[in-house]
Amino acid sequence: MCGIIGYIGTDNGVDYVLDGLKNLEYRGYDSSGICIINSSSQTNLIKQVGGIDKLVQKVKTIRPNGKLIIGHTRWATHGKPSISNAHPHFNNDHNIFVVHNGIIENYLEIKSKLIDRGYKFVSETDSEVIPNLVDFYYKKIGSLSEALRMTLDDLRGTYAICLVSTIEPDKLFVSRLGSPLVIGKAGNKIFVSSDPSAITNRTKSISFLNDYDVAQISLKKIKVFNQKDNKPSFAKFEIINQRNEQNNLGDWPNYMIKEINQAPEVVELAIKGRLSPKHQIKLGGLDDVSSQLDHIDRIIIVGCGTSYYAGLIGEYLIEEFSDIPVEVELGSEFKYKNEPISRSTCLIAISQSGETADTIAAINKVKDFGVLKLGIVNSIGSTISRITDAGVYCHAGNEKSVASTKAFIAQVTVLSLLALRLAKIRTKSFDNLSEELLKLPDKIRAVLGQSDQIQKLAHKYIKYKNFLFIGRKYNYPIALEGALKLKEVSYVHAEGYSAGEMKHGPIALIDKTFPTIVIATKGDLYKKTISNLLEIRSRGGPIVLITNFKDQKIKNMVDDLIYVPESHEETATQIITVALQLFAYYFSLELGNNIDKPRNLAKSVTVE
Ligand code: M6R
Image (cartoon, rainbow, N blue to C red; front, side, top):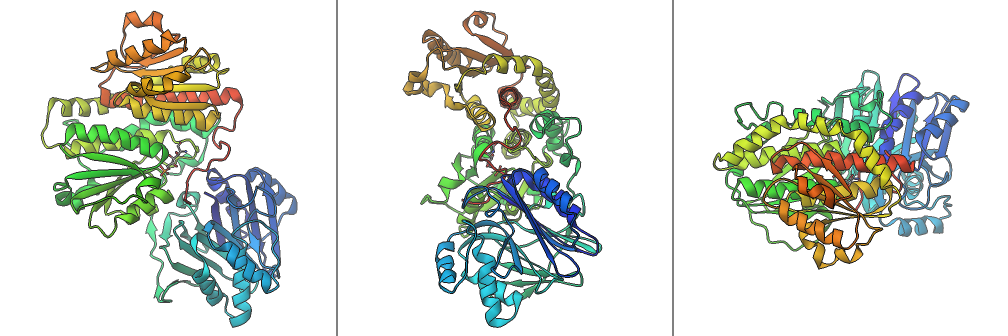
């Protein structure tokens, strides 16, 4: 949520920062701003409500120059999107400028103390207390870096902060606690970003700040110290091998459709080098914890949103192939539970961004229990990948559309590999799943080939304002995910339900204005799901059936039918999900919504 870019260098960095903000726009897009300090220590503060393009236009008319710059794209928490609430925020003397991600929980208390001391505030934000408190301490002690440290000591909550000031116009000051921040070095240019993917087109040499790190960055030196004990540490740079192709739309009209169409390639990348044609599983990221993994007797999977639904599929998969019991928990619930946990438990955190606050909190909750902590993460080098003991990257590439699509496909693929890795014996099902994973990319390509049919379906149902999605076993989490996707990008009411639960309440909703998307795949549960379908039909509810089973009898019992390629039930999940993603996409397209940046949402939820 929100994005930060900072720059210090020998060139004019305005375009670099605007370009970085463009890359970060998917993190928050209700307003943005930039503060440029030029070589005569003059400042240019430019803010705009709306997307980054509006900021770029405004900057172009002013044509500022500067070698010390901070920029921010906002997802509103405290105060509506407005110029005064947009970052950077500044002190009363207009010489200290700050961009901030996170939430300062005690800002009202700090604000009132500062008001008592004569400070004036122009925004409704929590962030504005930061430059003013730094100002207060600076005036007392005369050191900007020490004033920042004292300010950080007073803050409660989470933050990633980047500060510039005309008092020391050759430095960027940064700090983090519970919100990501990285430094990137490229010769005589240094970048700061809340997301490495926003600057990997400029440099692959990245240093990840840890909680309580405070860094003072000049072109001569990067000084890092610990906020709590003031002890110096150092910025350790590593090379991040992140592909940059994702930052371009190419010929696609938006990222959601581009990313849905990347699914076949995503599966190929997720299994590459991990699943051999002879069905050997090699998950290199787990090598160091191999023996620990062989002794676990319980798995808790944590995640939020779409990643949580991937976890629910993981539960079925792992329990199918191993004898290890699995529970799946929402990060936001797990962290407040009084859960008895033994050392032989393994916690698996699933996250696309690797920065979701609730999932991080769930991992931190078990950190003193001696449990094995694994991550299934997409963003390389993200917080979750660094605070877990080991893990498996999804390798789906940077996902820019707020609605997660390709990352989910990769997560389920990785969970399938993990289930096979945990299998104690090689059964027929083991070979079937391995075989199916290898065939999966082509089967997904076939669904993508049905895009026109799915678009027509979305067009036919566009008048409806409510949808029910139902399925059993693997298709239950898929129903939940299909409903989430539709509501996120279309803003229509959509509920996912287990088909078996329908009679316990939701069937009361059914009438001719409330269509149901039924997911029923070939296998033991097909007939049971069809019984549920018939119950809906008897009550006049319109029905769309998505199936991989060519059952001639069913044709006349449904309003619409989508056949997807046949496969075993474990891999049918990804195939059907792509069809549901396309349905949500075309629905939103027809409504004319901002597909990649749905209202009120942010890509990465880094606050609780
Ligand atoms: O980055 P994460 O996978 O941890 O994010 C979790 C959820 O915030 C995310 O899946 C969210 O539900 C998406 N908007 C779904 O499309």
